Image (cartoon, rainbow, N blue to C red; front, top):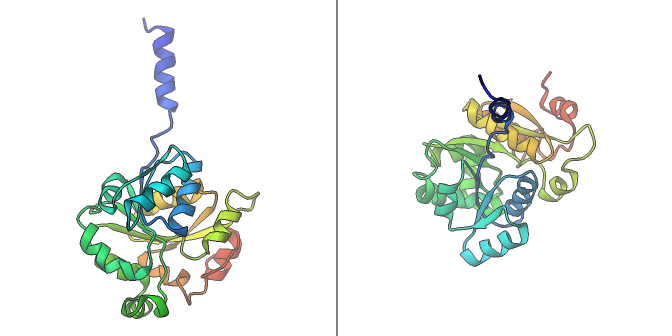
Length: 227
């Protein structure tokens, strides 16, 4: 006969929440710390990295016990999801430095390109799309675009607002990676709207019809001309 304690233990295991994804943050500026704060608030462990370890350590101390600090290589190894919270001009160098470490992982790219700051890579991203351009530098990773269409100050202010929540567009080629990022959108306090494959992220990069659109799901879909 199975004891009552065993039945309760089985039931508890059956309803236990799955472990939180670990997030490796490449960058500890406004983008990195804003997103890290939102995810840490929902119970996700985040390792931050920056150009100097001291900078990453300072950010981690300010974010609390679920935050840690490491080098970019350590953050790339740590994360189930790795986030490129860097100026877009850094993408080529990071591809060389971290490409092998993020192979097979979800690689979230919330960065935007600006010609005045990023130079030639901005011209390439404007022509080919930021999503496909990032993917070329990380051929083994599952690149997803998201959290780039709305400025971080607005995201910080609008997170977990009363319904209807602010909508965040997401695009990627790998369904599992898109699901991972969609879950992180919800955990941060927003509603995801999947626009399609990675190439569709042109719709919400600078110059796209959904860039800087601060609407709920219905409003974002209207901007995207989606039903």
